[in-house]
Image 1 (cartoon, one colour):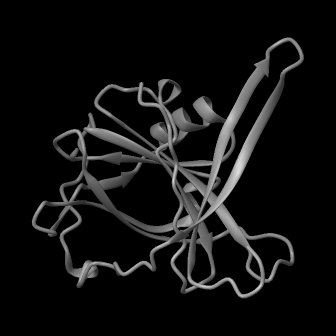
Image 2: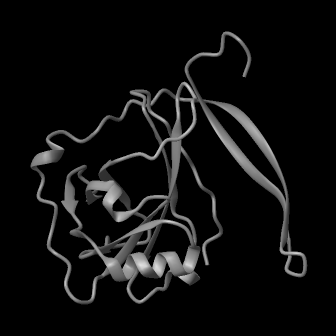
Length: 188
């Protein structure tokens, strides 16, 4: 990206080689960073999001569970999760902070995590989720635009996080510009 670059760009980090040596406990990784033009985002937040029913409370056996990495439960002021329906409407999936799920996340991935129980799961193999999150970022350093990367993992039914993979990442940054991230993972 040189001078005069404008608009939006999709930045993709593709892994070309990833080899872990368990004897030395070292990861050797070769990656390629690609920059391609991206359309200007035109989708804004859903109208009247604050007025939409957040969904049923979770029961003793939640239908799903979700985790936000790099944050503590106390860092999350509000987190609501919705399924986007084919007609564009939103249905609350019922999300509740959960200490047991937080402990499972920390055990599976290490570091800081905030775990949540999900009361309702979307149907079908492909679905869209809308997350409404208010959090206290933990920016450090003196960058003009500090950011915090927050990994997201999700599991349904009796799936365990140790058997799961990264769903998405949030690039939390103090900006009004839309920041898009993408994750490509093999589905297992």
